[in-house]
Image 1 (cartoon, one colour):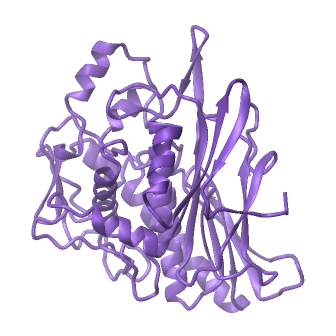
Image 2 (cartoon, rainbow, N blue to C red):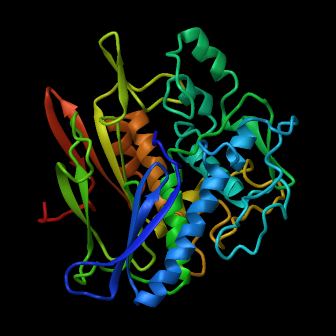
Length: 402
């Protein structure tokens, strides 16, 4: 899982290198790390976009941060109103362009309901191996919002009794628990989701060439400052490689896509702990309640918007729609992953979730998934007989920039 959501609004705009003064960087700190947006625009417009990005980051923090005690998610997890129902207010500021004030729609935080609806679709798509209702499991192992206590099997069995996406339903547009003990954790999808929300906002403002990087999760569209495909480095998944981009396994090119592409890597080589000489991965299998034990070191997933929309449409089901309209306040999709008028869907959120799914199921099932889903590409790095090996799907383009 990812340690996210310590929001600090420190932003800067700088002219990018390469002699192309129409490309600018918006950068700062958010979600427990850094973010950087490279885009083609004029300086005046870029400063306006900076303000919009800041509002979006603040609203996402106020909606789905498990580290913000006043967020909608924290209140939902804590059963603050005593009746297992979702929060009685939206965020204070409202996402840019939402037109919603802090308490206008009781219990219908648009970001919380949207990301839950999206997560439920992916839960079905992944056969239950991606499960945001397993917050209590992540907490128990120390990879969630609380310090873990190293649970024994009795603890795990007890927690498993109140995890599962069936423990939460939509009622009149509000998330409602069927068991008050269940807690949500969106760390495995939130940064990719944030990329898509920001990209949708920028696209709506007329930006066609951009790279949005939130904590290493990436959305890219159009061309880079050199007028070529965006290139993405994949870190070598080795112990001690703690600085992103310092030691690369490979560099890939992302084909120019009109509506953009999400690129996300998940791995176990930076977040783990050792107890009694045994290494415990931060990736927890929601079906067993235990940290995974296999030879997959990292999974990089590449998904364009068209492929993401098709996959999420097939994953629809009765759990999402109870006659309630579920929309987020940015004008993005309604949990379906469908592209908006600006052409941006939820491809990075899907890539984020699929990368986590692959880290749960391991190499063989990950390869099978990619081969059965045209449009989804992957780079899998794994250990075999003491050597580091790489599997790439046919559509992955290796760059010569490493």
